[in-house]
Image 1 (cartoon, rainbow, N blue to C red):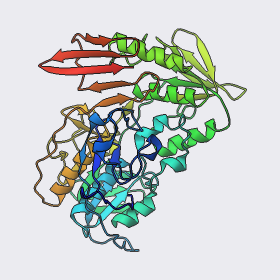
Image 2 (image 1 turned 90 degrees about the horizontal axis):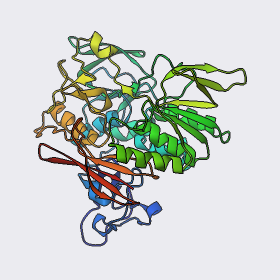
Image 3 (image 1 turned 180 degrees about the vertical axis):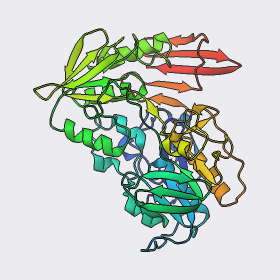
Length: 444
């Protein structure tokens, strides 16, 4: 938070949330890298200013209610004997719940168990960090230890949840059993790796630890890199790697990238943009195997019998919510932990879930922007406070490819026709009408 005090008579600094990537613009902090000094009011930002993470303009930001400051609370040195809230997961979802609870209650015991070290970072930055020269330390906004001390949370880092008993209100972990009054599952989703890919031979970049390892490997100098999977993350990483000076091949299962999301004209614009920064796209490519070469390189064997060689392979083949823990506990699971769409309760007593690991009416909810609202609902419910409940709406989706930026407002409907609204050399706007709604794609 900026130490600069408001002197313009307009009251305290306000915050605004990017509906595409979840970035928070704080008027007190400004955006110095984009020419906005600390103390720049949101209303004074030029209309062509872009989010430094995903590139949307200020029209896709909305007011964000600042949480009340929380005084640091002491954490008992010995394990807590009094049951309280237990949070599983140290990503943005888990910490958001801890923040939301502490904003309302300074004394309720909170334990956060996470398989990582609990560092706080903005996940959307991972797919654009290399091209911007960001190191792991630059991405880390706060250590888990510091955040735990600030919020009065007992942090159990490097701890894995291995068993859950809803009847006993207990969670077994690799560091012992935790009793809880309320449990919040925020353990995210994991890369879905096809059986044809040896996990020991390819990178899956879904968290800061994995990205740090990849960063160290690529820091040795320019390399030949193959990115398997031409979805959003695959396209973003391919461009980021190319901008960082690596020779990149992007392997997609279809003729064009993002075939299930983009209409053909937009997909062609995206492909041209990627090729313009040096990415080689190889479509209609299904991977049959991955093996180590005698010289240390990697051979990717394709289903058509051809192959290619790369020094580094990255798998961007989608995500899947882990199910073992919740299924063994008898919780409902449907492409994610099934939650009530309003309260985010699971089918188990006093158990909630949010973020990448949940599904609402059978659909995964893997967006950054709604997490703050989800956390607020859970916090208020746990504390017995009145809250209108969570109302899910498809956020703005922004493809962070600077060569061909694309934004989606709403959710495309399979089978519905697309209509070109505007087309020029530098801009393409399309819309899809269904039930009175309009979905627009913009491709520069």
